[in-house]
Image 1: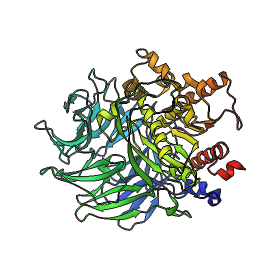
Image 2: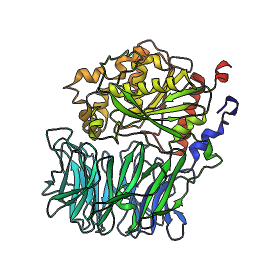
Image 3: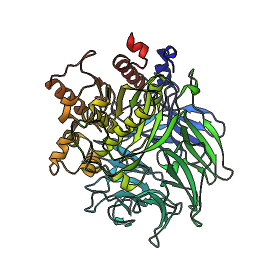
Image 4: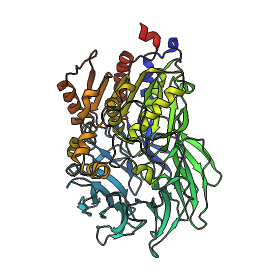
Length: 633
């Protein structure tokens, strides 16, 4: 946008205040959908009647402000189980709320507790919990109130599903010596007689998504052949039928009633489309939706209304998420929860330009922390959002995870930056998902290596090819692993950047290992980098805090005080190292430091989003204004 068309100050509040829904969950009878919705200004539990279209608010401040964690209906469809933590620290306990708004404490345990599944028997809750250290499984009896630990693995247990008769469980963990391996197990509901189904090769990752209605089959996945594909495992014959042609990654979601069809999600060129498969014929077809990103709520089995109808969320780069009811027979759909745009014009949102480039992981910009030889050249995907400002500053925005990817979905932080006049570059560096197992494993033992080079190569490319971008106004901004990337870009390639924002990011890898939650310690730190006692040099060398003296651009360090994934100690260590190296803090100093109270690892809460937007906007407007006219002033 032109300099004289810059948005009014209240645009940031307007954007952050747009009502959003999260975790839509179909009731057992298929006639209602529960979801978190902040249309009142605060996240609350709402229930949508599918027959009338009317929405009823069940809660009044009892549910968490931040809608990170989902909810599940009870078997009778009269209550909803939900997670509640303290100030965003994700150390959840489990509660239930009824139609009258009355709440009940269901499970209180130390550590993080997460609902995996709710039994159709009306008395069984299957939970994950870190009470005793590692994330393992627990069974809670709703009748007696007793919670029993049912697995005892050294590695984290994930993706647990109850059989329809609530007599068995399926779950994912690893007992192999190969740390990269993941296997599917089936056991009795008390955890006894666990059996490894031995899906795929050792070292590959298998997963489980759903049980068939009769309990005789499992909907599973495997990436032995590089790209993840869905399969149906017959528990009587121990045979697996695989689906898809391995052209694209496909993740299974849910069986339809009867178990003769299932839904999967296909990732293609940063878009995600649902695919309907017929189990007997093996044939699949994509559902007819605009190009964008389709997704399902927590636990895909609660996305099914009946054998013909499913509920899904759909979004595009310029279209906020909408809730759709999709007819699988006619391929017609209706919007049952529309996106609200308030006073903002949807046409003002920046669209995403998808492109690819080749990278060997070594940009032209000199590396000042760790030098690397050229890596294997790979095709890297990227998205570029043009703000319309001329010339336009650029914000390089690496995604978090790192087991994640940027996709053609609406992203509120991207649009916040674009509305302020900043074009945005997102790079799906090696290690990102959606491109196969080998692509993900490129990041193993190499944090701060080729993946960061890919980001910098992408930035150099767009600055060279898009003459409307201003090479003298380039910032990097990222959260979580994207925050690690922001820190690393600033100390590894300081010549490239004129400002930086590191949000809830990792700075000291050994401290991260010591203070993060147990399942992040094993499934993130050790899986990617090995144990710090075995690889102390790597942990030190690839920690941004080791190289603070390289910082040259003004930097904002921002972190939630209640973050348990990436503890606030990460930000404090970086701040202390900067001060020890002689850097000055403050609005006119070398760096600025902000801790966010009552917040953990980011938040969906409207007031907390407004606070984050105002903090980012204040920093950028002073340190790297979007308009050259403002810069001159």
